[in-house]
Length: 87
Image 1 (tube, rainbow, N blue to C red):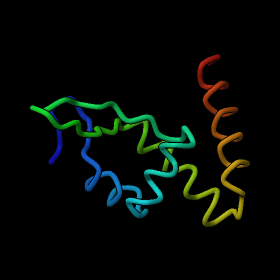
Image 2: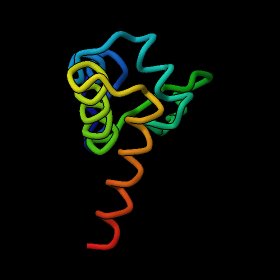
Image 3: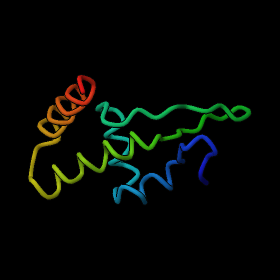
């Protein structure tokens, strides 16, 4: 279910990126995506931003199509983010 603040749940996010739940969780642990956690009663839900999705799609292309290692793709992503901050 799409959130009104342009954040997406896990199921929608994996479909938009084209990866598995497990891969998304792994990338979260590696810092590629940084979901926000939303408390709903006693449960917490991950919510991914458009920026998280864009970052993950970029890494997916680098890893799956360009044959980068995940670490190499992450370094390139961080360099790209740094350049965007300057502009």
